[in-house]
Figure 1: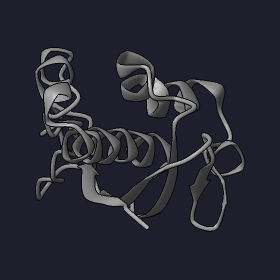
Figure 2: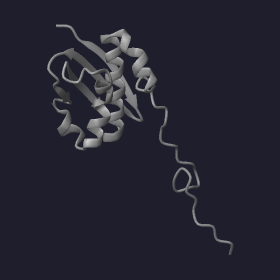
Figure 3: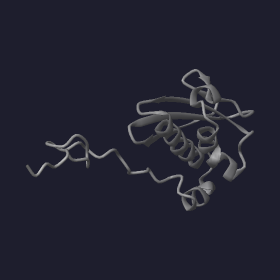
Length: 128
C-alpha cells in the first residue's frame, strides 16, 4: 500500500501525518479527528490544505500528535498534511506555499524573566 509520511510542528506540538489514497477518513491518536479536536474551528484549520487542492474525499489521514494544546496540535496537523500533500503530488507545492501552509509558524511562548511574575507583567511599583 502506498502512503506519504510527513511531520508538522506548531508551538510545542508535533504531528506525524500519514496520508494514503482512500475515501476521506480522518484519524488522530486512534480516535476520529472530530472527537480529538473538539471544536469546529480547529477542524476547519486542519481541512484547509485539503480543501484548497480539492483532495478532501480522495485521501485518508492518520495522525499521531502530542505536545501543546488543541490549537497548537491543529496547526501542527495542518503543517504535516501540507507537507505530505507535496510528497503526494509535487505540483501542489506552489499553491500550498502561496497560502502559507508549508511555512512553520515560528511564534512561541515568551520565557518568564526573573523578578517578574510573568514574561512581561511586573510586580506593582510602590514609591514608599
